[in-house]
Image 1 (cartoon, helix red, strand yellow):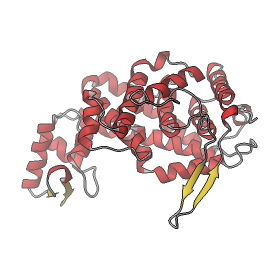
Image 2 (tube, helix red, strand yellow; image 1 turned 135 degrees about the vertical axis):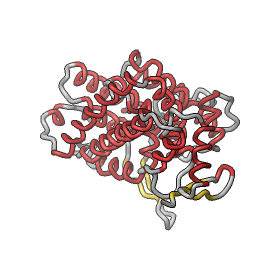
Image 3 (cartoon, helix red, strand yellow; image 1 turned 180 degrees about the vertical axis):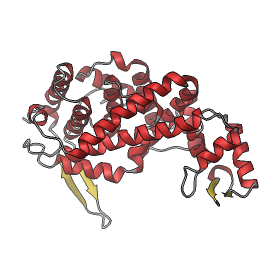
Image 4 (cartoon, one colour; image 1 turned 60 degrees about the vertical axis):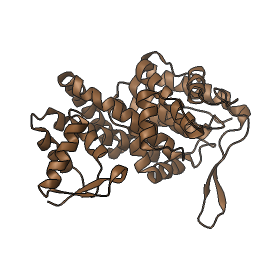
Length: 348
């Protein structure tokens, strides 16, 4: 049976990259706290945008998709799902809302993880919802020539409940006794969770939801305002590569979890930087068209109205549309396509 022990990690000397990432994240968290005190109402608009992006991106990583309009309706209006994909998306939305509203009273235990998994599948008739796996699963890759290769074999079903208990106990101990920096302990927990692969389905999405939960419980709230899932989806090849490199030797206890730690910390820091950029636009007392102009200057290549909306939470949709129209009319922007395919790029 694989043993889980943070003592090896606790005694490790961390390189300057990891120490630099941790210091920068704490700095970003401090700034965010200050910004939230200054402009809480405008920044609250970022929450709904992040919820939509997180729900869409985390499901899309697993190939679960629907239209942009339906994602918005499912997340904002809680409309009834129409098909299997939408049932899975609605379940993710419900778990994310539960974490947003109650993270401080959701302990890190197997029982609570199983309950969150049950909510993930609450819109479907899935007999394994809220239960650990009953069949051996494998992490594999399919190559262009069609052949499939097993990259990693997670724990067997009979080993899984005990292993899930163990990683929760170890995590709670090192956090409760302040034995390990939370920004190290969190990626290690998520890495072990993914190596156990405790469920028949939904392991990847549960790992991303648990990342958000663990970060909130340790006082890092950036995922509430900037979607961490969207950042992972944009660089999912890097995510899978870091995970694969860190899984090697896991069963024997010889794995090197540093690539995965660096990947997760880099993603968190990128989210804090995005938050700071968006606050800079919220803070400015400028006419709507100028705020939209400043937002477009942060974009390279083609971008959509939604991209600008994310950067301008203080503006209404109609103000953003009006600003874009004026910038197109003045020759600063070029508009391409129509309807939902409409996009823009800068000419100056």
